[in-house]
Image (cartoon, rainbow, N blue to C red; front, side, top):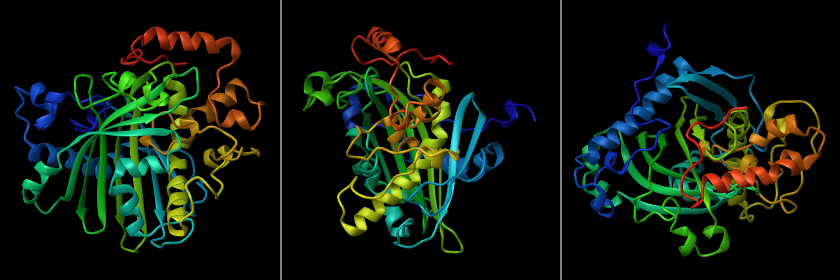
Length: 392
C-alpha cells in the first residue's frame, strides 16, 4: 500500500492551527468572523467523529507498538506506547493502558476518570502538571451548545467546547511555552468519552492574553508577564469501560514545541512523557481520596523506570528541585515538551547525576548562544521560532 493510501482522511486533527474563520461563530470573535458561515452543530460533530474514528480505526491500522509495556509508578497498570510516522508527515505517538475500575492506590474508578479527564479538563490538567503556571480560558460555546444540545443526536452527549491558553514554565535560557488549544469533548455512550485538543491561532483574538502579547503588560506576576514561545500540539483521548469492567485509557498526540528545542529531541522525549502522564494522574487521584496536598507524598517514576532502561537513578525530591516541563509535565499529549531531557541529556552529559534527568540545562558554552537565538527570533515574545524546527 502506498504512503498516500495510508493517510487518514482527517481534516481537523492536524498539527496545523485553525484560524478564527475556521471556527463556529462566537460573540467574542464577531469582528474577526464577518464572512464566516461555520455552523456549530456540524463543526462539533465533525471534530468528534474524526476523534472517534482516529481512535477506532486510524490507531489500529497505522500505529505500531514501540517496545514492550512500560511502568508508570504509582500506576499498577503498565503502558503500551505506539507510534506512527505516516500521518501527513507528522510524528504521532500514542499510549494505551487498562486499569482496574476501583478507587484504590495505583488505579482509579470510572467516576475518578470522568472527574479528572472529562470535567474541567484544562483546569484538572494543571493540577497534576507541575510546569503549568496558567490556564487562561479565552472563550467557550457553552451557551450556544445548550441551545442546540439535542441536535447532536444520540451519538454525543454532554458536549463541551472551549479555547484555552496553556502556559508551561521552562528553565532558562529557554522561553516559556504557550499552547493555544480548542478543547472539544463529549460522551459517546454510557461509560465512554472522547476529548480532543486542536491548535488554534489566537494572535488576533482580543480575549487571548499570551498569544497576542497582552500578558507582557497585564500579567499579574513576573512569570505571567514573561515572554513566551507559541507551540503547537494536537491530541485525541479516549476513555471507556470494557466488557470486563476495567477502564481502557488511550491517548494519541503530535506536537511541535517550536523555538530552539530540536524536533529530534522532542520526538525522543515524547514516549517517556506520555507514559509518565499515567502515573501522575493516578498519584493525583490517590491524593484527592486522602485529601493530601498536591505534590506531597508518593514517588514519581524514575527516568529509567519510565523509559524501560536499566540503571539506577537517584531522584531529587519534589521539594528540592524546580518543576521542569520538559520532563515533568503531564500534557500533550498533551504537553509536547515533556521529558525530552531524559534521552537528550543522556547523549550530552551521561554522568552528571540525578539533576541531568530532570532539567534541560544547556552547557555553559551553549547557554548564552541559545538564549540569544530565542531572543533574536522572538523580539516580542509572540511568534514561534522557525516553522521547520531544526533536527539534530
